[in-house]
Image (cartoon, rainbow, N blue to C red; front, side, top):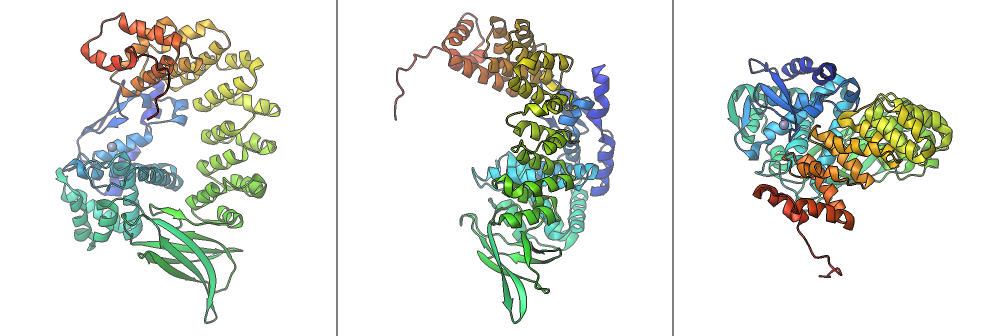
Length: 569
Ligand SMILES: [Zn+2]
């Protein structure tokens, strides 16, 4: 029974999560019971109703699907809300970060507890990237009636990390425990957290709250350095400038500078960076030659950095930086460096790195080098599916000499890898399609992803029955992810059979926006083609619709005179 085999992987770690969170917060689970309720066609990921979290049944996964996507982090996020959200509740939406940022932050904390610190740091980087992307659009602060998703989830979570970094982990924990106990079963606002810093730690972090919570924007540092001598002593002089827009203002943060030397060893200074231009001197008592310099090692501060480094420095950083994220930054900067200058270093780093995220980045860069077959063969068998995926996605063209290794991926433990292997192999070696289809005939995948890819390829190779099956998967008999996948496959095939029309219109009118959006993309695409436009408009006009349905459909299908030329305005 499919349901039975989903139970353990779906709810994996549920008990450990509660125990670890109670230990971190030093506040026991505040309710009498905890239930989790999977529901069909859920509009969001999940919802933290007090004592009864509801979540989308697309998180119901078996052991294989678990590898690609699972409920663990969402499980943790909603669990945290039983404290931050339900036990203490934001007074108004302007303070909702007291719920969402905390749920995001502690979920990542718990993932780090379960799977190790690399996962914690990797999650931090993802949050920084999303928070900085939001600042491309506006600079609204976190404490604001409508600051946007990335502020109340990711940026706020990063701010909690910066609290740990700035005030110390134990101080942070003491403050949070005090804050929770003091406001138990009550409403809170941002100032209550500030008060907790005063009450529990004797701190008045007005500046920190001002620059990170009440004001928007992030610092952008420009960094460069040079070795200098003063009175016979050697220093590394680091010049730090804040070059963000003056409207954002200056930030005042303690930042670590670490100077690493050739042959090992390093010196470090933690300096308060507050002016537009600061000069920090890091003593180099043994007058060693510099290998590379790190600004904010470990990447704790939410920021942009412009810090040009030579290929030699980047390779040294990739090999010698203690923190995962600094080695990852070196890899990102190496993307634009030609393979000949980095190949050996990347090959060595691949063997060294324990965390899949770094191996996936290395594999993506080295896959552009099909000459190195020994490496590609090894990476295609990497224990982590995201690494195998990265090689397969970046290998171009697929070399025939690697056929046995590539075809082995048709039986990969990850459905995502299997579906990509099926697609890429069928494209590259069309004469072998019948045997590829045979090999993958029994697998379904999440949202029937493998099955639907299988049918799409079969249809492309003339199997008419496959089209009917795709139409069936687009119908109300299936959950929305299967319907999304089927609609996308039919769009890719550019096929609009008449028996799809009722399912397509049902999807367009679905209250589930994720399904309706995909249906709309299909309609927009087909409406551009004369033969399909007629079919769609006829179906729309020959039926009667309720006023609500008409409001959705009319803008899509009502007759518009074709324009003879594009007006310029
Ligand atoms: Zn939440």
